[in-house]
Image (cartoon, rainbow, N blue to C red; front, side):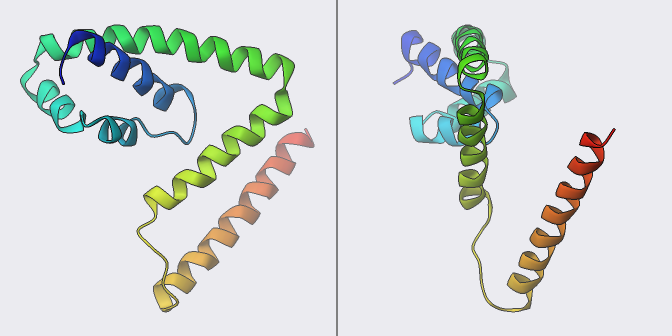
Length: 128
């Protein structure tokens, strides 16, 4: 299904992956069945595919930016929690799997150290 309207819709949804942290545009394109087509269009500079997706990307970018701006104005903490949820949920897609061998334990240790470092750095910023 490569109609222009479907490509514009795909570009609109793909813009969510650019605007919203934790949402992957690659995963969105894979779910829509367009990832291979998108890569092929980029490598061959196929404008009949790229232009409709770019139009959708611009439309979606404006929509999602306005939506996020509105949500930050009227529901700031809920919006932050939503973004944190997207980011934490994307870990399951990115991380290949957890095992209880030495590699898994090192991963947990690094996660805890990175989390503590992030907290310390954020405290430095708020103390200025």
